[in-house]
Length: 91
Image (cartoon, rainbow, N blue to C red; front, side):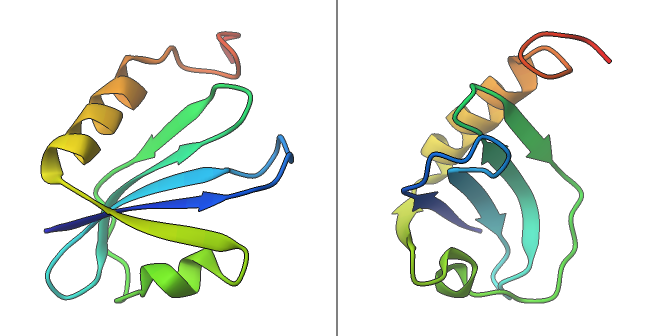
């Protein structure tokens, strides 16, 4: 597995400013966490996407950092501990 963080420098509240990725050896996404400036962490698992390049996902405005498995696991666990809903308000 390979692990990455993509970060964008924007102030938009409805778009993630950080994206954490877990990718298999073929480049397909397996899990990801979207992080929003308002403090919302949104995890997604059981993904099976076509191969992607993190640099393409980042675009010209984003930066890509490779992570360790432990770094991704810490973010994943943090996202799973967050309450469901938007800023703690349950839907």
